[in-house]
Every structure is written in C-alpha cells, then in structure tokens.
Image (cartoon, rainbow, N blue to C red; front, top):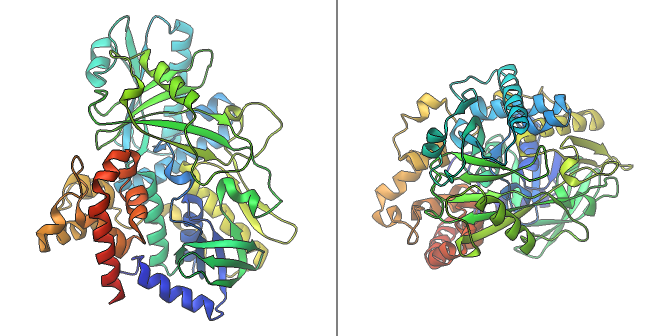
Length: 514
C-alpha cells in the first residue's frame, strides 16, 4: 500500500477520525472530476481536506463524457475566445505534464462528400487552422498534437476504412486530445489527492450542507454524523441545486451508443459528421483502444428531477444511427448497438436559447450563508475550475494556503511520454496505470490466477480487480464493473465477468479486514 492507496481499511480509519470531531479546512461534496480536482488542489496547497461522495468516484457525469480533451474549437465559433484559449491551455497541461499516461492524440477526420458545400469545407478548414493557433498559443508541441491538413480520399479511407467511398472527394484531418477513460482520470485525481493527505470518502450521502459543516449518512453502516470545516464547497454538478438555492442550472443530455469491437472498421481515427442544418455541431464516431467505438453525441435540454443514472432516449438512438450511416459503407442498425450511456452537463442557466448554445464557462458562487458552489465548465477545464474554487475558499475563510501548484503536478503514474514507452509492462496497462503498471502486472506474476482475464472477450485481468479494491477505493462489484474497468459499457461483457469479479472483490475486501 502507498499513501495514494484508497481502500475500505483507510476509509474506516479516516471516517473514525472525523467522527471524533476533527475539523478540516475544506470539505468537498461530490466525487466527480471537479470535486476530486478541488481535493487535490487544496491538499497540495497544505490544507486539510475531506471529500464526501454519496455513491462512488465518477458515479455521475464524469464517467459519461465523450472521453475527449477538447482544445476549444467550438468555443471560437461562439466568439468565446477566452474560454477557447483556457480549454487549449488545460488540454496541454493534461497531455504534456499532469497526465500523459491517461491521454492520447485523437486523429479526427472531417470527410467531404457532395453534401458538403465548398463554403462549409472552407469554414471547417478555417476553424481547424484557428484551433492550431490555439494549440501553439498554449505551447502544446506538434509532436503531441500534429498540425491539421487536407488528405485525399484514398488516405481518408485508409485512416477510417469504414467510411463510404461513394462521392468522397477527400477529408480534413486534425488532432485533438482524448482520455483513455474519464472515470480513470477521476480515480487517479482522488488517489493523488489522498497521497497529499486528503480523505476521500465514498458512500457518504450529504443530507444537509452548510458553509461550515456537512451532515452525512454512511451508506455502509447507516450511521449519521456531522463533518465540520472552515469552508464547504458544493461540487455536485447537475445535482448542485438540490443542496442550495443559490444556483440555477439548465442540464443538457448527451447520449452515446457503444458499438462492440469489429462493428465498424475505424482504425484509430475518429470521424466527425456535421449535423444537417447546423454550422458548428458534429456527431462523432470515436474508436477506443479496446476496439469499441463510441457514437455520439447529442445535446438536448432536460427538465424535471435529475436521475442518478440518465437513460438514452429512443429518439437519440435513431438520430445517431441515421446520421452515422450517412457516411459509412455499411449502414448501422439497432442490432449493432451493444450498449449506451448518457450524461448530464451542469450548464449555468443563461438568458435563453438552446442548450447547445449555452456557454461552457464555469462559475464559483457564494450563497447567502457562505456555502461555495462550483458549477458549469467541462471535463477538460476541471483543473482551472478547482483552482478558482480553492482560491475562493481561501479568501472567504481566510485559510493559510500556498499558491496553486496543480498545473505542474504530475498525477500518480504520470511520466513524460518517452519514459512511458519504456515502462516494463504491456502497453494496455501503461495507458491505464502509467508507471504503476508494473505493480499491477506483478500481481499476476506472483499468482498465475491473477494474470487471467475475468471473462471472455476482455483483456481485463483479475489483477486489475484486486488492484481496484486494494488501491482505487472500489467497495463492491459494481464499482469495478461500472467505473474501474468500464466493462458495463457493454452489458453482456459485464454479465460474463460478474461472478469472477464478485469473487475477487469479496476475497480482496476480506484480505483488507484481516
């Protein structure tokens, strides 16, 4: 175990310390990318921190993204130059300094068919060149994100073999950032925060939130307690309004379909498909390292109560399949869909218009009682959101804190890309665990049982399940299937592995209790 290990034993010990009445500098409510980012920022400044999460790390919106680390191109089209630059800077921070092991360059094709006018082609090309200016301004080297260029039809088909060649006159090729797994980023942030002393406590549901205390119910024991702090920060995303009346949100639903490996021959290049009648909206075919392809994304307003796990509307399934089929050699049908997921974006309510046009700017708001709430934003800019939230907490509560250091603070497992290529472990493990990959692999080397996959059709090994329980805070089988391995993105894969994963989780938890 290391100082960055999260597990049931550590949870029990730290919960007892807080139950005894210890007061911390900051309590963060919410275990998504923003909340864990805040916990890391505050703990790395020398502040005492407790993070409470009702369910599990990355339970909400943070695991339902497109897995992209955007450079801010769409914000240029809306005239939000500051937000576009911020996004490009934060993309560069993630890809070059804090998380090279969890990020990769994603080639993006914009295919040109007869339905694409020359004016549209020029507009996209101009946008891609502007995006490259943002990349250079953010000092992200072209060795990480190459420059955009035009490619002939033959090269476009070689990059994305599933495209239809009928009428294809070429394509525009650009590069953006992508995460190997958004939930893994959240878990790594939480573990890095824990390495600085932050208490990361899942299964603690906040029933009452004030500026200086949070009343929580322990989902494991059923007990309740107050956790006292000099400043509480509400980082619960789309659920922020349920804890305070000081914010008004307009949630937006983004749906994705999951296509099993082999369904669409995509290689490693994504395909961007323009939405008819729109100038700056695209649907993406996003190939993943494990062979899956994500097809998304929609952007529709949502009203009413916020569900714990959103569902993909049937209308979104039809829309995504029809639009993707318009550029593929083989049209997609519902039989090709192996899974689906939807996420809710916590957009700050504006003065009207569609949710697709609302700003992705974030805001840190102080309520009448002094409770801080951070809302809006997006995954790419989580670090800047966290910095602003902690800055506000330091000012409001008069906390003695060092300056923010997260822009140059490597997350656990991080290393420069040339060094990552030399790590003595399989490339798949390195992209998930970075420099910690040999420690994960060693579990399988010590015990051959742990080297075997947990189910047919997956490379996920028993060692990864054991590691998730011992070091990544997984407390039950769902934590592993849903958020540590993402096997549940294809339900049939999860069911095939469930019994073995449950056995491993039970044994690992029992070992921690000994």
